Length: 438
Image (cartoon, rainbow, N blue to C red; front, side):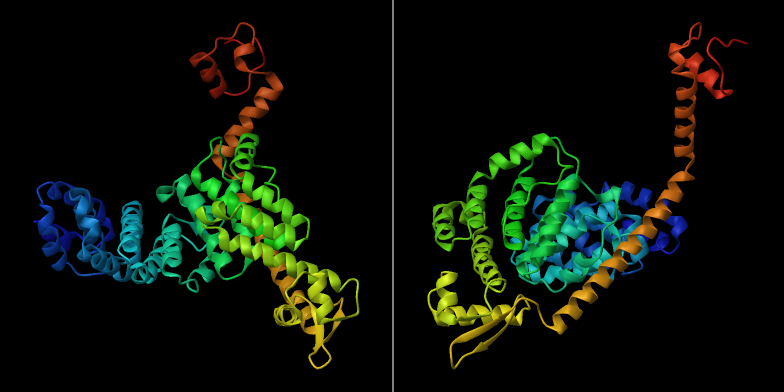
C-alpha cells in the first residue's frame, strides 16, 4: 500500500527519488475519500514527503477538497511539523499546497490561523534569508486579510537578492512587492512602502497586468504622502508600460496636481471629485492620508519662516478648523519627531525651531550608520558574485568566443570557409585566420 511505501522509504535521503516514483504509481489507484485515513497513519516530521503527496493527490482529485476543514488542519500540520529538508526536496509541490491553503483560509474567514503556518513555510522552504519564494506573497496576503502586520515586518525588512526559480512566477514577484507595500503602508512606514511599490517595476515586461495597475495607483498615492508630489516611474520601466500606466491612473494624477498646490481647499475638492474612484480601488484611506500630509508639510514650512506663532494663526495658515485642531496636529508632529517646537497652552503660542533636537539628530546618525552598513554588505555580495561569474566556465567560454569574433570576425563571413557544422568544427580546434584550411 501507499502508506507501507512511505513508511519504508522516508528515513534515508537516498531513498527519496524511489519514494516519489513509487508514490506516483500507487496513487493512481487511491480514491480521494481514503486519503484522510491514510494521512492518519503517517507521522510528521518523518513522513513529510508522503504526507504532502497525499494532500496534493486529494486536491487534484476533488475540486471541493480545499473547502474541507480537514484540509486546512492537515496543511497546518504539514507546514508547522514537516521536516525542513523533506519540504525543500519537494518545494514546488509544497508551494502549490501553500497557495491553495492561503486562498481557502482567506475565503473561509480563517486567515488568522494561516499566518503562523505560512510563516513557518517561508522559513523552511527558502534556500536562504535573501531568497524570494512564492509563499512570501501567500503569507503577506493572509496577514493583510487577518489585519495582523507585526509578524510580516521582520520578513519584509530582510533584503531580497535572489529569486527561487523552481516555485516562482512573474505574478508571485509582483504580488510580493504589492502586498509588502500594503503592509508597510498599514503600519505607517510610508517610505518603505514607496520603495516596495517602486521595486515592482524592476521586473522586465512588455505587457500591462492588472497587478501592475494596482501597484501604480498605490505608488502614486504613497509618493504624495512621502514627497508631496507624484513620483515618476523608474527609468528602467519600458516606455509602453509607462504610457499605459499613466493612462490608467488619470484620476490619480489629477489628485496629485491638487496636492502640489499645497492648498487644502483644492485638495478637498479633488478628493471629493475622485471619491468614487478611490473607494472602488480601495485607496480612499491612502488618499485621505495624502491630504493630511499636505497639512503636515505646510506646518513644517512654517518652521522655516516664523519663530513664534499663535495656534490661531497656525490654524489659519494651514487651513485647519480652529486653534484646538492646530494644537492637536502640532502635538502629534512633535511626538513623531517631524518638527521641533514647544507649545504654551496657557498663552496659546507656539515656538518653532528650524532644527530638531539632539535626540532626533542621534536617531538620524544611527539610521545613517545602519544604511552605510547595508551598503557595505551589498558591496561585498556584489564582489563575491562578480568573482563567481568571472570564474564560471559558461562566462569564460562566451568571453573567448567574443574575443575570437572581434579578432577574426564571424566565421560565416570568412572567405572560403563553410558555415554551420564545419564552422563549429573549426572553432573547436582553436583560432584560425580567415581562409585557413587543412
